[in-house]
Length: 268
Image (cartoon, rainbow, N blue to C red):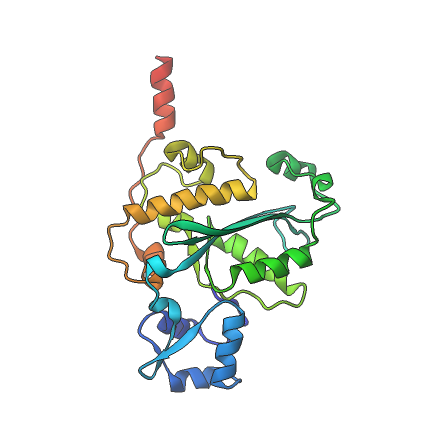
C-alpha cells in the first residue's frame, strides 16, 4: 500500500514484489541516485535489494518464520485525518508466531465527541497526562521500523497513521501491508468478518474490550495465527502471503448466521 509520493508506478511496484525490476526501468522513474532512492525508501519502511541485476523488495526473500510483523490498531476521535486525530494506538511485534515487543499509548487530545467516548470508553480527561500526537508518532515510527504492517481492514489504520506522521514533518509510511480481514476471508469460514464477531465465534481474545486498541490488536493477533494455521497454500515468503491475501478465492460463507440458529434452538 505505497503512497502517492512513491516515485514508481504500480507496474514497477508489482515487479519489485515478484519477478524483479530492471535497472533501466528503475532509473527512468526516479530523480535521485539509486543509492539515495534505496536509502530514502529504507527510512520509510521498505528495503529494496539487488539480485542478479534486478531490484526487489527484500520481503520477496524473507521466509514467514523470519519476518517481523507489526499488528496495529488505532482509535480516533473522528474519521477524517485533516479534522481529527488518533487518541489511542497499540501494536504487537510478532516473529515466528510469538510476541517480541509491544507499543501501547493514549494520545493527548482536548476534545472527544461523546459518541466516540461511548464506543471506546475513552474521554478527553483520560488523555490529559498522555503524550501529544507528535511525540507518539515519532516513537511509533521507530517502533514499526521496516516490519510488515498488519491491521483489520488495514487501509484505514495505515493511511491515518501515515498522514498523521506527515503533519509533523515525518516521512509517510512505505511499509509492506497485510490486511487481516482479507486474509481471514480466505482462510477462516465465518458468517461475518468483523473482529467482535470473529472473537465471539473463535474465542481469539479471552478478555476482549472491543474498540480499545490493544484489545483489538490481541484479537487480530489470534486471528492472524489462526489464518496462518488454516492456510493450505505453499507460501515461501512474505510476498507470497501478501499476494495470497489479495488474490486467493474467498471461502464460501454460511447462508445463515450460526449464532441466530443456536439462539432459536435454545428458545425452542
